[in-house]
Structure formats: C-alpha cells, structure tokens
Length: 483
Ligand code: ADP
Ligand code: MG
Image (cartoon, rainbow, N blue to C red; front, top):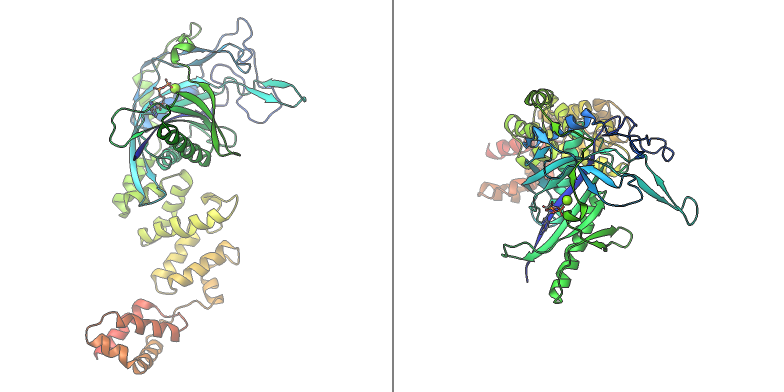
C-alpha cells in the first residue's frame, strides 16, 4: 500500500516585547525563579490584565507579511484547564475571533531524495495568547516547584492548513517561518530559550484517498531536527498500526529525543473540554485601519519581495533566491557581495556553496561574523573574473582567508603562487610543445572529435602546473591547430 502523509503545524512564537502581554513584568529568560512574576502573573485576587500594544503590533506585522486579513475586531477568551503552572486556572487566548486570518507562506524544500523545490501553503490563522509558567522538578530532591517567570509571556500561535506532505516540507515551512519572524523583528527566535515551538499534527491515508485519516498531535518540538525525527517516527508508527489491522486513536503525544520515539500523553480533548468563553476582564481588541496602515508603512522589504527582486534584477532561480532570502543574515551577506561583484550568479553560488559550507563546519560563526567578509569575497571573485586565478586557486585563497592566514587577497595569491600564466608568449610556447607531443589528439580534433581538445587543454594545464587560464588555453589551442 502507498501512503500519503498529512501534516498541519501549530507554532508558538514568543514575541519580543520588553514586558508581558497582560502585565508590566519583564519577559526575561534565565533568572532566579519567580522574580518576574507580578500580581497579575500570580493571579492574585482582584488583579486585572492590561493588554500590551507592542504584542498586538507584532501580530499585525506578521499578518501583513503573510498577506493575511488583519481583523479589525478580535476577542480574548479564557481557555480553562487545571495545571500547577497556571495559577489563574485558565489561559488567556483567542478562540473564535483571532487577530490574523488566512495568509500564505512559500518556502524551499530539500527532500531526502530528488530535486529541491518551492512549496506554498495556506495558513489558517494566528492568534495572541499568554504562555504558562514552568514546573521545575528535583531542585529539592523528591519535590517539584513552580517558576512563574514565563507566565504571561506573549505568544503568537500560528496555525497551518493540513497541507504539508512530508517531514521535509514541515521542516522547510518551520525554517522559513522562523526566518520570517526574526526578519520582521517580532521575535528573537531563540530556539534554546523556547522562543519557537512547534506542535505537529500528523496523519496518514492511502494514496488517492480524499478523506483525512485520524491525526495525532506531537507537542512542543523545539528544534528542526526533533520536528523531522518526530514526524518520521510517528508516520512509521501510524502506518504499522493500520497495516496490522489496528486503528489510530486521536491523541496528544510527546517526542523523546533520547529514545527517538513518540509516546502517548493523553487521548485528545476536544475544544469543548476547555469551556472557552470571552474574558470579561478584557475588552474586545479593536484594530483600526489607520493602525494597520501605520504598521504597513513601517514594514521592511519582505523575504518574498526580496526573492522576486533577486530573480528579476540578478537573474537567479526561484530556489536560489529562496535560499538566499532564507534569513536576514544570509540575505544581507549576499547583497553585499553581489553589489560589488560583476557576476551575480557566481556570487550566489559562492555564498550558498563555499561560505555556507565553511559556516557549517565552524561552530559559533554566522554570516554576520564570517571571517571572509562580503568585501573580501567580492575581491576574490574579481580575481577570478579578471583571469588572475582559477576557480581552484580561488578556493585555496578562500580557505586561507577563512583560516586567518591573511586579510589581503592579492598578497595571498602571490604567497601561494596561484597567479595564472596570462603572458601570451609563455603560453604559446607551452601550447606549441603540447601540440608537437600529442599529434594523435591533434589529428582526432582535426577529424571532428571536439573532445580531443580537452585532452590537449589538460596536457597544457599539467605543463603549467594548473596555472594557465583554461579559457585562454582553449582559444590558443584552436588558433595554433588551425593555423
Ligand atoms: P484543534 O482545534 O484540535 O487544535 P484544528 O482543527 O485547529 O484542531 O487543527 C489543528 C491543526 O491540525 C491544524 O494545523 C490543522 O491543519 C491540523 N490538522 C487537522 N486535521 C488534520 C489531519 N487529519 N491530519 C493532519 N493534520 C491535521
Ligand atoms: Mg489547536
């Protein structure tokens, strides 16, 4: 049986406000327990929430960036449940009337097998809510404590339609969404600190079936790797259950990265169980068209706009432009190189190839702190363009720059003896010698076998220890053989 995977993601993005969504306590990670829990966060009797407009503004920004409808009227609801880290006994969220409706996101996907491609999916909604506190286990042996520093931190929960069809697509979406919220300046996106957490809803169905299968929801995946591993495990598990004649039970599951498996937490409650109702302590949220227009006028160029610009102005493919706009830092780096380089496509190849690979191998560096700065890379590309060095030579200089052997491109080219021989006289002598010694290849070329010329170019390269310009050699060989 061929199976189709169906995934919808719900992502909790922590918004980068100074203070909490309904109180003036600071949103600050890593401090002693409960130092940032004011009377609102502690749910003291009589304490009333006051909405933080910075959080609303960030939600509007997000809605505009994904081409969604930003609601003029939305409502905060109480989602009632008991948990020790939730002193009010309810979480303030938005249910029937969220602030952001619809929208789309386009992102690159790198499948395990086959060519990379671009995918566009629809978003359902995004709503504002508050985070809960945290239970802390074992600080005193055998006891648990509650830390309410995180209680009331503003979150934007972003929900997709069930349109993702593989773990790779889910990761492609999550990466692009992460890059977007950081790009927009609405979240710090710090994954270690839990600023970006995905719940993955996963189901499978026989290929060709139009009805969805029963889904399970894997909670709180806070890294792209865990997201991918958890989905792949869950897909296999569901297929096995069904193929063994069993049925999937709708449930909430947890991923255990050490064991590499998902485990059932509880069978899924329905939204009815939460007894949602509008919070009587908060007015409905009214967002005027003037406010939306003001946020719009302050928007930076968006990744998708920049992607279009790179395709149109620089002639890049959609996929390459997608990769190069996959984050603020790679985008800034690329534009700085491209502005100073003659060939924008070669610049793109180097940024996505050499630079990205070097960053992958160096812990703790980013495009913003790469030892080969855009200026240095542009200079190096200029030396390929003017024939001073070959591609191979340029890679050697690149590595030397990266390793801190020097800061001066021309000095490094000299020091490493990488300058190509461009003196026509010297090259001609070498070409003539190679022609004389390889009469067989010359005859083959003369009788129409184009490939024979490659062998001759190869011989010339050998004779010059790789320091000749292959293009120049090629032309010279043709000229000498013909004449
Ligand atoms: P709930 O109210 O239980 O959170 P929603 O209908 O809001 O459920 O859906 C939550 C998420 O689950 C959405 O991202 C949606 O796309 C996804 N989803 C819904 N049905 C399925 C399914 N059969 N398989 C996979 N994902 C699904
Ligand atoms: Mg939900």
